[in-house]
Length: 152
Image 1 (cartoon, rainbow, N blue to C red):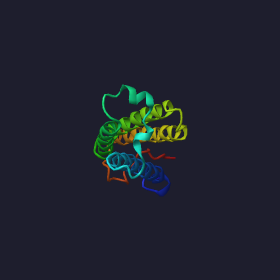
Image 2: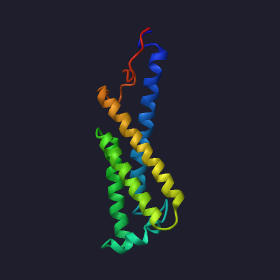
Image 3: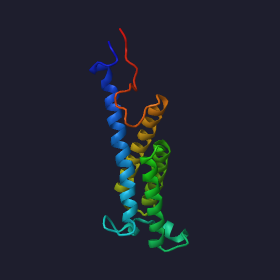
Image 4: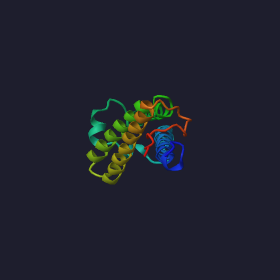
Protein backbone atom coordinates (compact mmCIF):
# COMPACT_ATOMS: atom_id res chain seq x y z
CA UNK A 1 0.00 0.00 0.00
CA UNK A 2 1.39 3.41 -0.95
CA UNK A 3 1.96 5.80 1.96
CA UNK A 4 -0.06 8.43 0.07
CA UNK A 5 -3.23 6.34 -0.07
CA UNK A 6 -6.14 7.51 2.07
CA UNK A 7 -5.90 4.49 4.38
CA UNK A 8 -2.24 5.16 5.18
CA UNK A 9 -2.63 8.93 5.39
CA UNK A 10 -5.72 8.79 7.64
CA UNK A 11 -3.89 8.27 10.97
CA UNK A 12 -1.63 11.19 10.16
CA UNK A 13 -4.54 13.49 9.38
CA UNK A 14 -6.30 12.48 12.61
CA UNK A 15 -3.14 13.07 14.64
CA UNK A 16 -2.58 16.43 12.97
CA UNK A 17 -6.17 17.60 13.55
CA UNK A 18 -6.03 16.43 17.17
CA UNK A 19 -2.74 18.30 17.69
CA UNK A 20 -4.15 21.52 16.24
CA UNK A 21 -7.41 21.29 18.24
CA UNK A 22 -5.54 20.77 21.51
CA UNK A 23 -2.93 23.40 20.69
CA UNK A 24 -5.49 26.09 19.90
CA UNK A 25 -7.73 25.27 22.88
CA UNK A 26 -4.87 25.00 25.38
CA UNK A 27 -3.27 28.16 24.03
CA UNK A 28 -6.29 30.42 23.64
CA UNK A 29 -8.12 29.18 26.77
CA UNK A 30 -5.42 30.23 29.26
CA UNK A 31 -4.90 33.54 27.44
CA UNK A 32 -8.62 34.36 27.66
CA UNK A 33 -8.87 33.28 31.31
CA UNK A 34 -5.68 35.17 32.13
CA UNK A 35 -6.91 38.41 30.59
CA UNK A 36 -10.21 38.01 32.41
CA UNK A 37 -8.39 37.96 35.75
CA UNK A 38 -8.32 41.76 35.29
CA UNK A 39 -12.01 42.13 34.35
CA UNK A 40 -13.91 39.30 36.11
CA UNK A 41 -16.43 38.95 33.27
CA UNK A 42 -16.18 35.16 32.94
CA UNK A 43 -16.18 34.62 36.71
CA UNK A 44 -15.40 36.27 40.02
CA UNK A 45 -12.02 34.54 40.10
CA UNK A 46 -11.19 35.51 43.67
CA UNK A 47 -13.97 33.31 45.03
CA UNK A 48 -12.07 30.24 43.82
CA UNK A 49 -9.00 31.04 45.89
CA UNK A 50 -8.70 28.68 48.82
CA UNK A 51 -8.72 30.09 52.36
CA UNK A 52 -5.46 28.17 52.81
CA UNK A 53 -3.94 30.17 49.95
CA UNK A 54 -5.28 33.51 51.18
CA UNK A 55 -3.50 32.92 54.50
CA UNK A 56 -0.08 32.33 52.90
CA UNK A 57 -0.01 34.74 49.95
CA UNK A 58 1.51 38.09 50.94
CA UNK A 59 -0.76 40.17 48.67
CA UNK A 60 -4.47 40.84 48.27
CA UNK A 61 -6.64 38.33 46.42
CA UNK A 62 -7.08 40.79 43.52
CA UNK A 63 -3.33 41.32 43.18
CA UNK A 64 -2.72 37.58 43.35
CA UNK A 65 -5.32 36.99 40.63
CA UNK A 66 -3.58 39.57 38.44
CA UNK A 67 -0.32 37.62 38.83
CA UNK A 68 -2.22 34.41 38.04
CA UNK A 69 -3.55 36.12 34.91
CA UNK A 70 -0.04 37.01 33.72
CA UNK A 71 1.12 33.41 34.25
CA UNK A 72 -1.88 32.10 32.30
CA UNK A 73 -1.37 34.49 29.39
CA UNK A 74 2.33 33.61 29.18
CA UNK A 75 1.58 29.87 29.37
CA UNK A 76 -1.01 30.17 26.59
CA UNK A 77 1.39 32.12 24.39
CA UNK A 78 4.10 29.50 24.91
CA UNK A 79 1.66 26.77 23.80
CA UNK A 80 1.00 28.72 20.59
CA UNK A 81 4.71 29.18 19.78
CA UNK A 82 7.32 26.69 18.65
CA UNK A 83 7.66 25.68 22.33
CA UNK A 84 4.27 23.94 22.37
CA UNK A 85 5.54 20.90 24.28
CA UNK A 86 7.06 23.01 27.06
CA UNK A 87 3.95 25.20 27.18
CA UNK A 88 1.67 22.20 27.42
CA UNK A 89 3.63 20.88 30.42
CA UNK A 90 3.32 24.32 32.05
CA UNK A 91 -0.43 24.40 31.40
CA UNK A 92 -0.76 20.85 32.74
CA UNK A 93 1.11 21.64 35.96
CA UNK A 94 -0.78 24.91 36.39
CA UNK A 95 -4.15 23.18 36.01
CA UNK A 96 -3.19 20.51 38.53
CA UNK A 97 -2.17 23.24 40.99
CA UNK A 98 -5.52 24.97 40.41
CA UNK A 99 -7.30 21.66 41.04
CA UNK A 100 -5.47 21.24 44.36
CA UNK A 101 -6.43 24.82 45.28
CA UNK A 102 -10.07 24.12 44.40
CA UNK A 103 -10.18 20.95 46.49
CA UNK A 104 -8.77 22.82 49.50
CA UNK A 105 -11.69 25.27 49.32
CA UNK A 106 -13.93 22.43 50.50
CA UNK A 107 -16.15 22.93 47.48
CA UNK A 108 -15.75 23.32 43.69
CA UNK A 109 -14.87 19.63 43.38
CA UNK A 110 -16.57 19.55 39.97
CA UNK A 111 -14.26 22.30 38.73
CA UNK A 112 -11.25 20.48 40.17
CA UNK A 113 -12.21 17.35 38.22
CA UNK A 114 -12.70 19.43 35.07
CA UNK A 115 -9.26 21.03 35.49
CA UNK A 116 -7.66 17.60 35.97
CA UNK A 117 -9.33 16.45 32.75
CA UNK A 118 -8.04 19.51 30.89
CA UNK A 119 -4.59 18.81 32.37
CA UNK A 120 -4.79 15.34 30.79
CA UNK A 121 -5.52 17.07 27.48
CA UNK A 122 -2.42 19.23 27.99
CA UNK A 123 -0.40 16.07 28.60
CA UNK A 124 -1.82 14.58 25.39
CA UNK A 125 -0.74 17.72 23.54
CA UNK A 126 2.78 17.35 24.93
CA UNK A 127 2.91 13.77 23.67
CA UNK A 128 1.52 14.62 20.22
CA UNK A 129 4.04 17.46 20.01
CA UNK A 130 6.86 15.08 20.95
CA UNK A 131 5.72 12.78 18.14
CA UNK A 132 5.70 15.68 15.68
CA UNK A 133 9.19 16.73 16.83
CA UNK A 134 10.44 13.15 16.56
CA UNK A 135 9.38 13.14 12.92
CA UNK A 136 10.48 16.77 12.41
CA UNK A 137 7.14 17.95 11.12
CA UNK A 138 6.54 21.63 10.53
CA UNK A 139 3.30 22.88 12.06
CA UNK A 140 1.77 23.48 8.62
CA UNK A 141 2.59 20.12 7.03
CA UNK A 142 -0.46 17.88 7.24
CA UNK A 143 0.69 15.51 4.50
CA UNK A 144 3.96 14.30 6.06
CA UNK A 145 3.47 10.87 7.63
CA UNK A 146 3.50 10.69 11.43
CA UNK A 147 2.72 6.99 11.34
CA UNK A 148 4.78 4.85 8.98
CA UNK A 149 2.82 3.21 6.17
CA UNK A 150 2.45 -0.54 6.42
CA UNK A 151 3.65 -2.33 3.32
CA UNK A 152 2.13 -5.72 2.58
